[in-house]
Image 1 (cartoon, rainbow, N blue to C red):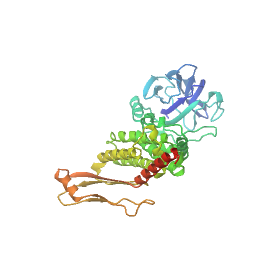
Image 2 (image 1 turned 90 degrees about the vertical axis):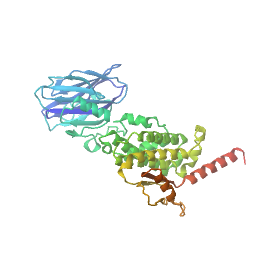
Image 3 (image 1 turned 30 degrees about the vertical axis):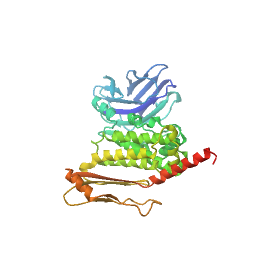
Image 4 (image 1 turned 60 degrees about the vertical axis):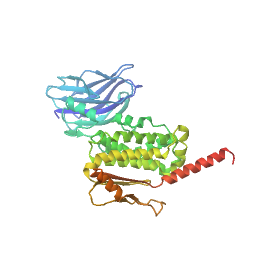
Length: 430
């Protein structure tokens, strides 16, 4: 291989000091074939150096040792021994004459987080990487500065000439390794959606366990930040619904508030995603609606009432308003497709239908689905001929009909009111 680029996300533990290897590649005839070495000194920035076929590049101070995540890319080519190190999308240093006119030989062993003192073995514990490494990718070409900046800006992976893509199926892990699942590559999305501020409650602890048990690393090898967001969102919604079905009493009013705020921020952000493919938007909206459906389940009526001390009085109607915002944003985005959108959940039915109006009388009728103990005499949702003709007379030739049915809202409200009644009489001793 005459050229290579390796990128990864690194988090150094500030309590560890000394030399270590971010990765090491060895062949039988030459142990120190290709390495990224780190040097951690007390009260000093993290230092990194590239090593190719025994030739050691200079140690460079790259970022503070503050336990923060950083993206790091290193590249090398045998054409003049040119090399470069970039951090968080910005080039730190480039150089020449690092093993000039050479190449990296194949048939070796690539190890993450440990230097090899012999081929594939002879590890020293005091030289092991101390921290976390994820999203390590390898290309058999030099990625120029503009491509690295694009990856950082768009939270994406350049697919061309990708030699190794991060994923559990491509890794052989030793039993001593501790693995954690998390949303690392696009950290700003995590902050945007409030994930990092979720309370440390039993409910969210259970959510984390469900996610960790359910998801595999390769499920998150998407090439864009939007796909990362969608994968995370879908998994979160499914885990919340599962937790509600398993043990609704574990959820606190604080948990409900944070989940509601997550949907609120999502509804606001959906407005800016009109350039995305409609299929992605439909999937994203479906995930939010699934999460919203879980929150207005009758089994959570008590939690909604208990939010009143937090200053929250509208209770379930907060979720209804947020659902309407999501559907309006979706309608604006998919209108040009002229395709219907339908979603049936336990507590919410949605049907969106783009329609071209004419002078011919017409009406729109939607029949909600039946779930569980819902009444068999459910009324149809009707937009009358008179209303349709009124829209036409006002000059609206292309419209979007949005039908939303909340199957258990009255049950949620009645349970909350019953709890309020019983609490009041309990306090008064009646």
